[in-house]
Length: 353
Image: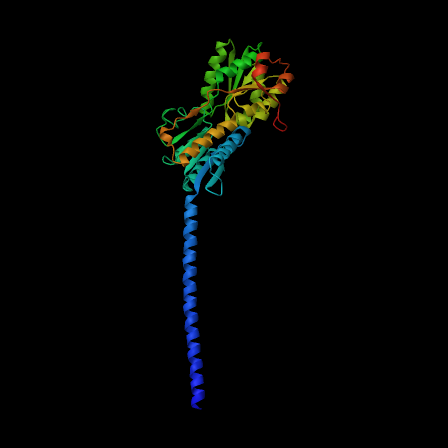
């Protein structure tokens, strides 16, 4: 081989070596950039995930009143700047009136590291309270938080729980019943024997009825299975039926009104949505607005602007008079002019009765 050929071969080998080294260096540099970029993305994702506030909502059962409260909570959180998927994650659970499910669901919501828990209706709130003594809990529609063992005091709750009471103006509701049915002599109280709040409301309603000269007949039911037969029996013993804020009764309101209508007995309720399901009238708190207030309190806690222990339980000072004009006509009731002027007149919603 000539010297010239040898030099050419040597040059080519050197060039190839340089190219290989360059490729290795470029590859290593590219790998390091990719690794750092991946780590950066992971860190960003972790930070973003951490920034998401978590809210666990436990609803006792599905019926129009509680569904409206739930909607109000979510709508108000959004109004306060907490948009699901952006800076908040909402975990929804519904016990469908099953106490064992409520207990399990409460544990699940706590284990998800919720920043705030919302209990819609007393049984749901009690289940959450049994699951944690540290995570903030906001009550949505708990009539008597003190009697339910959820707070020490309405003005100074003292623990990890605060929220909104849906205590209705019971005495005013009984008075409304007497105004609409002036000839009434006896009122029948229909309520669930398993709900503490219902019992206290019935006691207050009974005193108000007796003060108006009405005789009181009480008809507690253990579950929705006995409601139809109970309404049939009590209708023979009273002139109108009164139902307090009661989840069991609310869940079976179409059955209540169907059986009461057959017997010609008007039903006075404590919830606006129940009037739209065939009740005659109520002076009640708007359930959607109740949810709005619940969401507002939850947002304050999420923003670090309030702690449950020192946030007073919110109570509504007024209620709306709502009368079902179709039911009034059905029972031949003439709505007094003063009531008709100030009341909100509604009709039975299709599919609700």
